[in-house]
Image 1 (cartoon, rainbow, N blue to C red):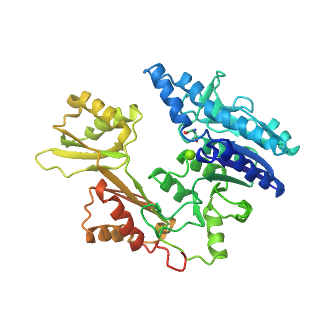
Image 2 (tube, rainbow, N blue to C red):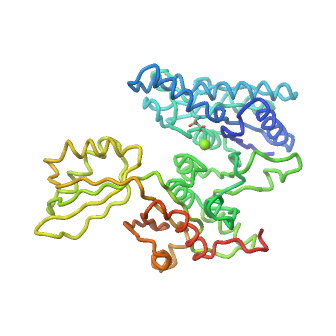
Image 3 (tube, protein in one colour):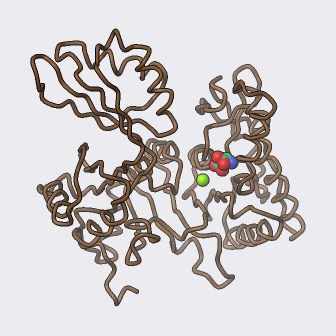
Length: 426
Ligand code: ASP
Ligand code: MG
């Protein structure tokens, strides 16, 4: 017997019919002999609808009241799932964020978990009751409801798994795992049996939107084994315990899985693309100490995440162009801030461009293998794709290209790194 946390996303919870399907999956997991806690998202589209109500009610963003409104979607699905499980003859009850409680710091609308009290939960699960927990919500130090940022139910699930010592946190979604790249772009994309936390962090943060990035960081920190798998399955589908999805694990378990399945060690594990960045160029910035600090300090203060940065070689006497990227949503704000600081920074022109994409190749194999970046640049050059900026980490190489070339670049790289499924795999 083990403890399992099961998390169901918005598409899995959209409507009573789908909630019944979910209840059946939960019942089967319990029947396999496990103690089960379930974390749910709001029905697909519901959180967006609630966000819009807030905007209509008051154009000025009030994060504390926003949380009161947007957290309600998960309260509905948690209650409905408990009701449906009971209709199937299971013992089940819901536990709202404040009831457990899941304590968070007072940063409304994007709260971080401080601590979790699972005494009541443990007792109820040990007595055979299925615990149903709304994702995304917690309670602040001052006793008000908080939410954990969009996609935050994944983080709730991982936090619960860590707190109750679950053997696994299964994230049920509308895809059956994590793929080498977006299967809508590359028909020969392959489902990965397993990835490491580090790889998943890079893939999640560069646009492979399967899990909230923060949940992966938490899983890595707490050593929670996560499986991504589909909830759109038949009764005779492979049981979750036989690991039909993609496991997210540490390096040593990854190594065991590789050996057990006779898998080759790949240098590149996956290719991600992200069209949600925008480029900013400041021309003729003074080429002297402190100049870039003047650019990036005010952006950091406004919590705008700057990603790729390049500073060109000074062209004329003592001047240089600085190019960088920010999330597309933040572009208007970033532009306004930079314009207001124009005298401090001392640039000539500000040029912005939304039509860029970031393509990243990710793999732990890069740590011990040289030449990955060179292969990437050569493959792109052969297809006439121009690289506008580059950034790297220990396990990732990213390039900025024209947005129109995204699909071509992903396909070319998927083939170049030997990731295409062979016909036998299909
Ligand atoms: N319902 C929230 C959202 O749509 C949280 C979640 O589903 O993870 O962002
Ligand atoms: Mg999600």
